[in-house]
Every structure is written in C-alpha cells, then in structure tokens.
Length: 111
Image 1: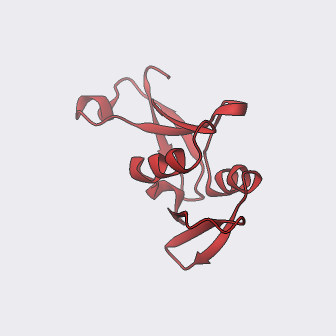
Image 2 (image 1 turned 90 degrees about the vertical axis):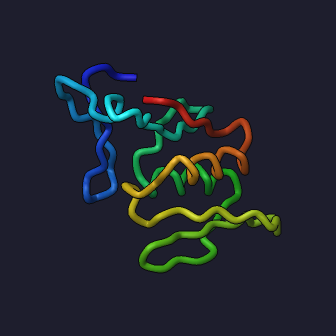
Image 3 (image 1 turned 45 degrees about the horizontal axis):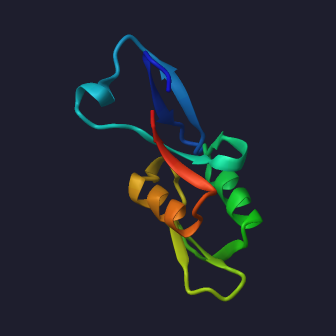
C-alpha cells in the first residue's frame, strides 16, 4: 500500500501509481483493490500478465470479442472466467471471480 497516491490505469492497460497530495478514492469512501498472484507476490497490472499466470494454472482463451475475454480450464472443467479486454475496467467482482476459481494462487488486496 502506498500513501499519497492513487493507482490509475493508462490507455495501454498498464496500472501505475500516480503520486498526489490526497487520495480522492479514500475521500469518496471507495477503496481501490488490486489482484495479486500469491506465489510470486506479483500485482496484476495488465491483461497479458494475468493471462500468463492463469495460463500456467491451466486456463486458456475460450472466447473473445472487442469487450470481453473468456477463459476456461483445459481439463474440461465447467468453470469460466470473463475479463474485460480493457484492463482499466477490471473490477473487484472480476478479481474475486479469479480468486474463487484459483484458491491459494490469487488474492485481492486494498491499496
């Protein structure tokens, strides 16, 4: 967690810390969340990084369009993860979906 800054998503889908004097997210009562790959303590900052980690756990692309990427397990499981193609639109509901379907590998943390 970093004091005096806000995580923002750039147009290329990369998340970065923007330093500023106040934290408008905290002031508005909203909390910022981040998805962390636990074994490497790596914060997911792009769809590509998240797909790489999910791929190592047996997930592969199932369906994609301009707005959504869906992943399914190669082992024939009925589990499906839907993610926004624009990583800036990744919300806590997407993050918790990843966590629930990959217990022990991901966690959601407050920033």
